[in-house]
Image 1 (spheres, one colour):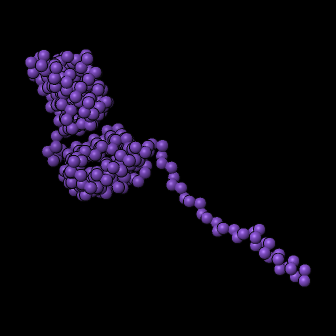
Image 2 (cartoon, one colour):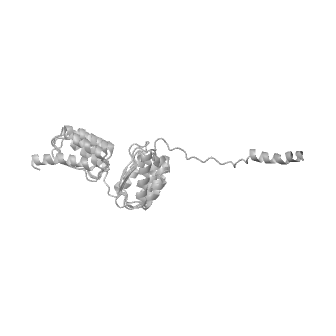
Image 3 (cartoon, one colour):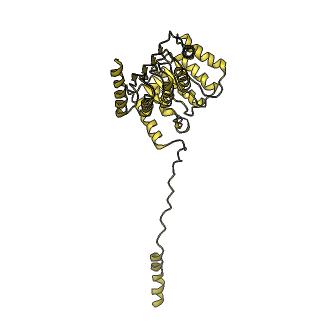
Length: 310
């Protein structure tokens, strides 16, 4: 009888000391880390802009995604291209230094086939070649809205392909902006006394043209009014302008409206006023500048106009 007790109790002892092993769970799959270039703020800004383009926000007329290298590294820009294809408010698209390759240019060209609002493309310093430009040329056959294309700083592009591209633009009656700017620069450098007003509105002026213009302005003694509105001048461009104004003694009115200037650029202009006592009016409407900085700049200029009788 005691033997029976021993035998029947063994299974109970085993069950208590060796509970069933829980089923094996798969380790969760982790998303690959973002490339080093992709900072959280950049990704958030990119997504917000794409959402606004997709929503056809009527207040968004300029899409500036310069130095957003995730366009080429992350989703390939697919969300942006799709949003642009149905948008009818964006007029300027700037993707400078954004890792755009030939395949990205093919996708962009397809989007532009549908878009009827974009008139200016800024694609400097990317990674596409002559092949990418050819996609753009095919696009221009269907798209008659684009009239300014800036391709500086990309891989060497066949001059014949560039000539074909710019030939299409000029055949629409669009002036060759590069030639226009160069002709004006010659007159500015030559101190033409008949050139007292410089109008370069909407000329697609970026960093390279900006530097050349500012160098010329520094030594000019006849220009009084300069209009550089509706271009792509950023804080670096204003920094160059501030240096030019330290030497220039003739310019009284400067229009920089609708560019890419922030409070940093406005502060450069404030510093320029310490050495330049000729400027009495600066128009910065349509830029992203803190109200406090604008108030300070406007106050300084208002005092000058009062003293000088403007």
